[in-house]
Image (tube, rainbow, N blue to C red; front, side, top):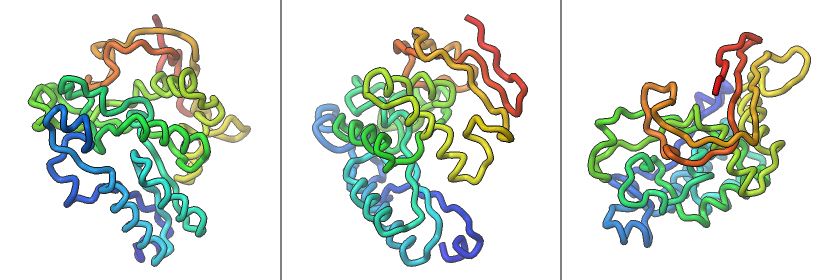
Length: 260
C-alpha cells in the first residue's frame, strides 16, 4: 500500500477474511441450517474491510472495495468517508437483486462469492447505492463451464455471468426498489469512469461516443441459451425481465445491433 501510494495507484480490495470464509458455500443463518450447507458470517466481510481501512488510514493510499454485500460493513465505510479517506465502494448486481433464498433447492447458478445474503442485507445495499455510500454497481461477471456447475452445491464452482444481464437486472431496482434512473446511470457508468480516471461515462462534447440504446420498458423472458457469452451460468435463466438493450456503440462505432 505504501508503494501504491507513491505511484498514486488505485488499490482494489476483495474483503473476505480467509480464515472465516474457507469452505463456506452460503451465508450462515437459517437458510444454511435448513439446507445443511456450510456458511460464513457476514462478519468475515466486515473484518476484512476494517483491516483494509486501517491500513489505508495508515498509508493514505487510494482504495476501492469491491463487492460489498453485507449491512454490517456499511458503518465502517461511513466512518472512512467521514474521516476523509480516499475510499470508494462497489456492489454486484447479484447482491442488489437476489437473496440467499433464491438458491432454493441447491441451485448452483446462484452460488457466488461472496454468497448471497439476507433480504435485509439486499435492501441495505439498495439504500446505500441510493444514498451514494456505495458508488459503483458491477456485473460480477464470473464465467464457469457447465461441468463445474453440475456438481453438488458445496463442490460447485462459485460465480455467475453478469455482463449481458447487467442492465435488465439493474432495471429491477428502478421498477421494484425505487432507485431513480439518474442514480442507476451514475453507479453503472459515471462513477466507474471517474474512479478509474477515464474520459467516458457522460454524454458531453468531447467524450468518447460509448453509447447504449436501451428500451427501459421492453419485457422479455431470459433464455440463457441465447446469451453471447460462451458460458451460460446466469442466475436469471427463465426470469421475467423488463428493459432491453437495442444497440451499443464503442467510440462511435456500432458493435451490437439487437434484433427481436
